[in-house]
Image (tube, rainbow, N blue to C red; front, side, top):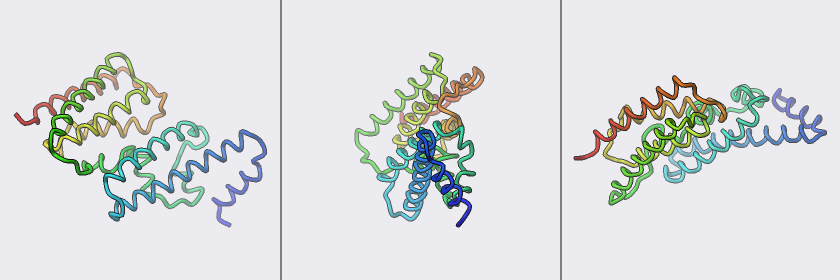
Length: 216
C-alpha cells in the first residue's frame, strides 16, 4: 500500500467524531476538485471540449477550490504537498487552481466565439462599467481579497469581449497579474495602503490604455 493510501486509511480509522469526519470530507472534496480540474484541463488541451463549455466549468471549479482552501488552509497550507501525500499526478490542475486562478481562455486571451454585432458596443460599455466599479470600490476602502478579486475577474472577462483590443495590451496583462496575486491570498486578507494605491494606479493606467485603443 502506498504512503498516500496509508495516511488516508489511518484518517479513516481515526474518524470517530464530527470534527474528524468534517476534515475527511474536506480532504475528499479537495481531492475531487483537483482530479476534476486535471481532467477538464486535459480535455481542453486535447480539444475534446470547446472553449465555450470549458470556461464556465473551469470558473466553477476555481471558485469551489478557493472557497474550500480558505476553509482547510490551516490543515492544508501547501496543496502541492497534499497532492504529493496522496500520490496525485495533477500538474495542470495545480497550475490552474494554485497559481493562475483563472481559466486558460482568459489567461491566454482565447475567448469563446461570439457574434460581432451590437455586442461589441455592449462589451465596451460593460468594460467601462467594471473599470469604474473596481476603482470606486478601492476608493471606498474595499481592500479585502474577496471584495476585490471578483471585480477584477469581471473586468478581465469584459475586456476579453472587446475584440478590437490588442492581444498583448499591457492593461490586460496587469489586471491578470493582480488576479493571480490575489488568488494566492486568503479571502479575508486585506491589501495594505501601498498595494491599494498601486492597484488603483494600475487600473487607471489600464483604463486610459483601453480608451486609447477603442476605434475612433
